[in-house]
Length: 348
Length: 268
Image (cartoon, rainbow over all chains, first blue to last red; front, top):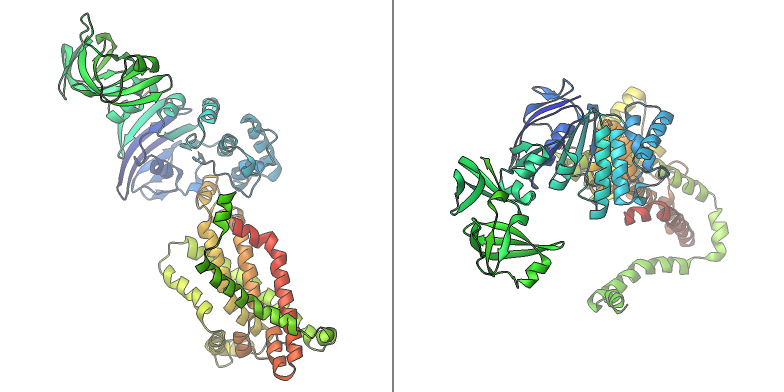
């Protein structure tokens, strides 16, 4: 079971060109901002939207190709939507059994399979409830059971966790991860939340404005982002520049000292927690010292995330205590230092 | 508390016309009840022809409603969901019987289905079927006038229903027909029921198209509204009694179905 898709789609301002391959049992996350075309891509895979050109092939069978368009109901797939979308007029068990019944399974067998799946997703005893009686997390679990009960070749997840509150999201994400590990088919997860992508996917494709801007394992994406969007998502400051020896001359001006030798056009990436702020110019001789102005400050748990404006634009995480003790505020002049060994350098 | 009371207070410029409106709608009904000759109620109701007219009214209105459901629900689906061209024209056509004087509708039906009519003459020649001045004509006239109420109500329900459920059904292997039967129809059932009640009530009260196209023959085409009108000319007391009977039947039906269906559609 595997998916190979190459999709071309123009819709209004959207111009989508996406090529992906997903192997057996692999989970591919399509990560991108709203309006990047992620959901349209998923709708094409589902057969709900015919592509302008390209192909969708699952297990060697053409679902979309030149002159071929298999309608959604003839595709062996399961899909989970952002708002569960359980049929309100059917019981939870009948919702889960729906796909089996339409594909010809008998009533008794379908109900038994639905019951098994409800147990697997932790909803035993809820079979006869109406969807309206379920919590958001329970509804999304039932929706997952409904998508998986037919043993599809392809599982499509459209922002499956974004409608849930923070605490529920955490537990449902962990459960989803477990079910995805057991799932033999290919999975495509669409999300704008990097945490979902990092936690659930084997591989991530980052999409901006209908194009792939970066692909890699979650670790690669998190450590070596290639666009500002991805860098912001994973919380890094991304500084493009040109390397010569252990120095990177930034495109925007300024020089960053790095530990490893770097040549040619590179990215220097700095994590917010490796930036230290001082009110007075620090003693000693740290190699990276810049003057900066605090342009913005957002409390973030026990830390305050400061956006720094200056020769080198950075983001710094300061503990809330330090922020208060140093008397920092938006508009304050500070000195920012980063150890050379804390700067990641990689070629563009 | 005070906030809720403030919200409930009606501004005078609205209160006065609203009160006049209620009186305007309710007074005629009160007048009807005041003038009802209660002592003659039983003899009037058991008079020959009354039961017959009532039975014919109920049967023909119910048949007209069934026919409207059969044709109107698919029509509403086409209006709400299909992307075929000319839907605007189609919707206008469906709305015409709503604004057309029923008598004109009756004349039009007569011109098409009458013995000399375009379809009627062919029915007569080929099958020996004549429609005008039969109970069938009553049902057709009532359907013509009442079906738009159903279509518009169901179309509204279909538009309000979340079309994403139909996409979900498709991803679960349901073809268009299965989706319609197992998802769309149950989702809009309250709207269909509300439309059917409206349709039935309109059919029950139908007068103009019926008398034009079906005539006024006791037993075959004389429905309650026709009987009321006829009675008014010779025996006003009888007309009042018949009117009250019709009022009770339609109000009773509405109240009976309201809690089950109409209220739910309103709440949804």
